[in-house]
Length: 178
Image (cartoon, rainbow, N blue to C red; front, side, top):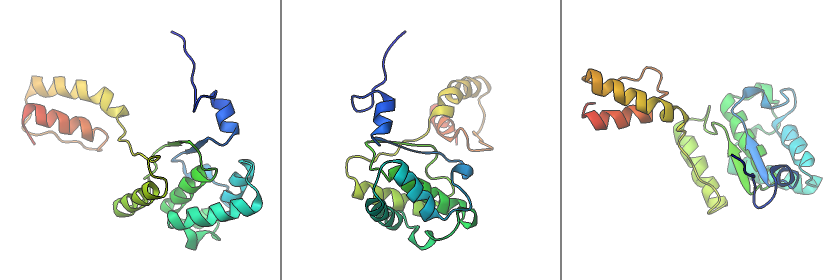
């Protein structure tokens, strides 16, 4: 099978060069650890082609939006994983991308703060922020779990590591057990 990938009508490399793709990984090592969060963000902003003045404005706006402005001067290595995650989201948004790719954007952020930040992002860029439930594990686990549950008829479904929670909920509903 063949095909082409397009991002807003452009090949991915062209879209990336224009700053149309923002990305953030869940890895702790994605920052230069000895640099402050602000210096890390400024580096990304300058690499994305933003002027110093515009980069500074974007950093201030995003750090306030994502609630890490009080930590801007802190070296990344001294910040909590949740604070680095907030800064990583800011870094992904620094060029005002049209496409945002996030790997575990809520990692290290408590549930209440995570929901609040998502609501603030949605309000700041209406119609451009969505949230998805990771179904990668579910696609593999659900058929297997369903077959095992139908075959063995357990009294309940227990998920030790919470990796397959969506699959477990679905199977519980299908077989009628907690």
